Length: 113
Image 1: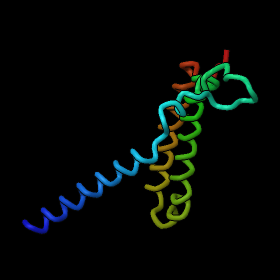
Image 2: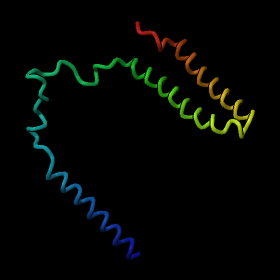
Image 3: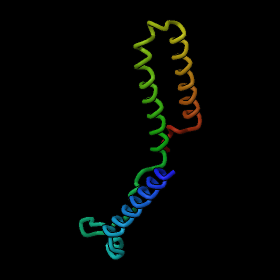
Image 4: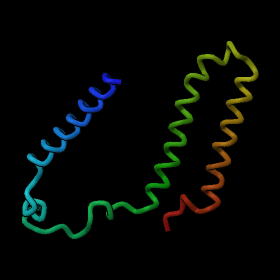
């Protein structure tokens, strides 16, 4: 019980020290209101607004195919040992992936107009 109390006090002291250091090194309020330097001009738009929302959907489709490669590489190494069930499982996985891409295509995810 006494050891747990010592650990609790130590953790609380560490948290207080981290908060104290953060308070000492934080920026002054006036320094946060200064606009970023951009060749003497102020930014015309927010940094996030430059990317169309459709890019995020394309990114998700890319990540799905990236995950496909992550699963297919180890599959190629063990397919000879496992045999037919491994082939069936991989084709089932590819069918689910294809169904997702077909659904995205049908919903117009890949249309840019």
